[in-house]
Every structure is written in C-alpha cells, then in structure tokens.
Image (tube, rainbow, N blue to C red; front, side, top):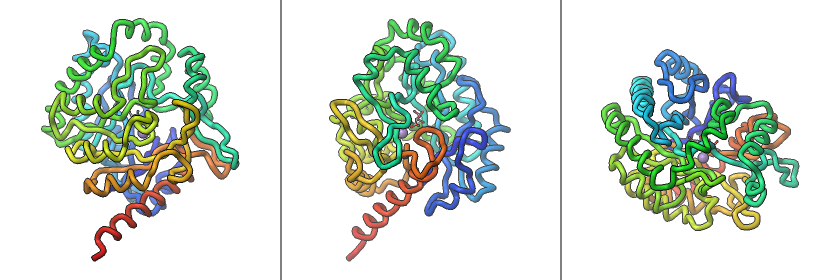
Length: 359
Ligand code: CS2
Ligand code: MN
C-alpha cells in the first residue's frame, strides 16, 4: 500500500505541500492541472512544472486525479474522436513525467453530488451530506447554485462553470442516452485509449459515480459490482482498472465492499483506492464522517483487511474529511481530518501487517 494525499495546486488548495510532507507516511501526492480546459491535451511544460513543485517538497507525483473526460465522449458525439486523440496525448505526456495511474470518472454532467457541504455534526465539526429527499425536490440549477454559493469560494473539482451554465442544453443532449448507450460510448472511449496506456505503462482507474445512482434522470453506470465487472471486461487489460472509493460505493447499502475489494483486487483491477467513511441517515441519505469505523456505517477495519488480504500494492488515499478545528478549506478537503484519516489507516495497516506476520 502506498499512502498518498490529494493536492489541488498552489492556487486551489488551502493546504501546502510542506504540510503534506509532514504527515507521517505520506510520500506521494495525487495531483492534477486545473487550468487546462476539459478536452484539451495536457501540455508537457505544465505537467513538468507540477512535478517539479511536488518533487521539490520531497514528494512523488505518480497518480493524477483527474483527467476529466469531455462530455462529447460520454454523449458519443461526432467530435469525440478528436477529444479521444487529445486524451491519448495527455496520457503519453503524463507517462513521460513518470505518472503511473490516472483516475477519471464517467459521470454524465455532474461529478459528485451533495446537498450539504458543511453540515454541523454536533461536536463543532461539519461534514458533507447527501439527502435523497431534498435532492428530489431540487432542480439541477438549484443544485449548481447551492454548491457555487456554499463552497468557501473554491471552485470544486469536476464542476466546470462553462458546462454547468449550459445545463439545459446538456440535459437535452442526454435525453436519448440510456445506460446501454452510455456503456457503448464508454467502451468506444476505452478502446481508443487503453492501447496507448499499455504502450506507455499507465493504468486507468475509473472513480465510481458518487452517489452511485441515477440523478435527475441522467444515466449513471459506475455504481455496483455487476456494472464494474462489465466495465473492466469491456476492454480486458491490466490498464483498465478501478479507483475503489469506499465512500462512493458504500453509499449503496447493497454493495458489499470487502467482498468487492477481494473480487476486483484479486483480478488485479485496483491500482488506486479512496478510503473514507459515511454515516447513513434515513434510507439513501447519509453524511460523511471521520474515518473511524465507530463514527460511521462502514467497517474500515474489514475494508483495510480486504486490501491487506489481496496484498494491495497500489496507491491509497484518505478521501473527504470533516472540517474541524476551525479550519477554512475546500469542502471535504481540509488538512486536519484527512491527516487524521491517514494516521488511522496507517495504524490499521501496521496492525494487520504485524499480526499476520507474527509466528
Ligand atoms: C473525488 C471526485 O472529491 C471527490 O469526491 O473523489 O471528485 C473524483 O476526483 C472524481 O470523480 C474522479 O474523476
Ligand atoms: Mn472518492
């Protein structure tokens, strides 16, 4: 297991690389370029600049999250070939800079969705929350307005302003795209990029849809074992894998996370993992919690044990944390609670390693 930590760049993060390097056990940064429009190839000079910044702080840059996918690829529009060619160029350039894993998602229109970004948890901390009933009474525009006005001034990853200002048009474009059509377009994309990944040694890792269900009538397919199984087999290659995000997949009560980790990990399909906890409220609603098992509904010991059992040697990072100790940070991405998450996950890992190697 290679412990890592996400960083949004010097302009987009309240956390510094110098702070990250002081978290015990963190040697790797999960980074991205945030000033390249979605669909454009990532230029070599910008990639190298980011890499240099990270390296100058004694950290490595081997995982990118995310190279986002242009909507035309998901829609199967005639322009998709051009965007796929650009994506191939980004993969080649990232590989030249030593990147090993690229995380991405295949969610139509929205990236992750929450109805509350700073929900008070009663102990002075706040966390992000998803209320299913509330969302059903919101329009896509309500959601965008809420997120834009409540994210502490940060632009959130995957929430590109241009696309979201054209919501009506984008929704119309999706009106004839169902799950099957989206699978087809997804396969076309994978067929276009995986051969390049194999050539340059980069592993793609799809992030599950968050939450893992259809929203506003949009198709969402990266949601459960059955669909993930179909995805990794659509183009069967070690380079076609999963970002196993426990908080996203865990938001569907039917997903048995340890079992899925053993299954996909056993197939060699998990190059990257996000590990965090959520606490279910009623039905399909939940709020995010600290990483600790007893604070949430997911058993992080069982999850880490499953990773241990499959001899997980990929990259792993804590995912969203609460906002604690008065920190002012982007929702879910403060320093303190994620650093606590790292320490907890490292503790579980050390205990698993030592108790299993004891004679
Ligand atoms: C991340 C996602 O912040 C988050 O919730 O897990 O935004 C993730 O980076 C993307 O979905 C991956 O493309
Ligand atoms: Mn995640």
